[in-house]
Length: 233
Ligand SMILES: [Cu+2]
Image (cartoon, rainbow, N blue to C red; front, side, top):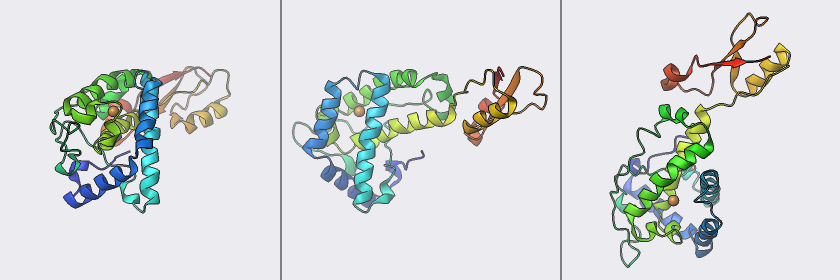
């Protein structure tokens, strides 16, 4: 969903956002993440994605309610880039962040044009979990504590970044609904809902081809536009 890059914001904006996140991340909010962890959401690739999306949504709801719609969707921090100074929180004490430049790249495997290689949410989540864990471990301090990580403001833009990868995957992958036994017109409508279009005129001749469109952004034209799926009508 094209979130802003945390590192492209002004220092003043980052300070403000970090402050808001700290006010939001009360012990109750932090505990919610811990309870979810105890329930196993970090081990299951699908709930790993969905839990954190919901968790971020709650922060975004708060930001809106506090009069900050400009931070919704929440900006993202790409861990190939350094953690900006305004997000070096906490910077003292035993839980202080140890490494502001963990240099963990999610490229090229998680670049937009490569996301089609993941066949399912489970596959995507499975691949994301270890890379995500590596970031938490390398940053260290409370970021490496499942129990306390949400207390670190950078936790949130980091999970924004992960969520964006999932969102992008959802956008560029499309499930072709089954059209078995359907009349042409009905199949056409059903496919239309999924952003698919029947492109052949010779629909009397099976198989019919469908062209993935709409959900495919311009840079992906080569890889995706023209991707044909065989339909059994
Ligand atoms: Cu995390």
